Image (cartoon, rainbow, N blue to C red; front, side, top):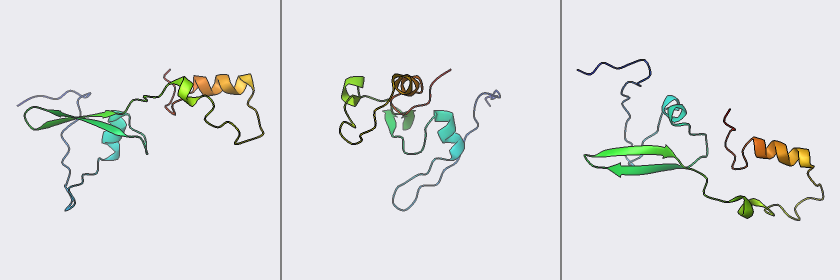
Length: 96
């Protein structure tokens, strides 16, 4: 029997619905760093195993620039842009 450390999560049992869906519990989502509405990448591994990862943003800042152009008469200040950049333009929390 393998001894688990305090950092290793214990196994969790999930139920598959009649539609073939599985709901991940909040503690599992928190462990993966997944936020509500965020997409998940699933890698199929040998031996019937799956590996889940929070999907990483694939866009570029160039694709973001001009996204809201013409939607508001208000203009952001340089300080507001810097604050948005510091908090993560892709909607992800800033790492400290």
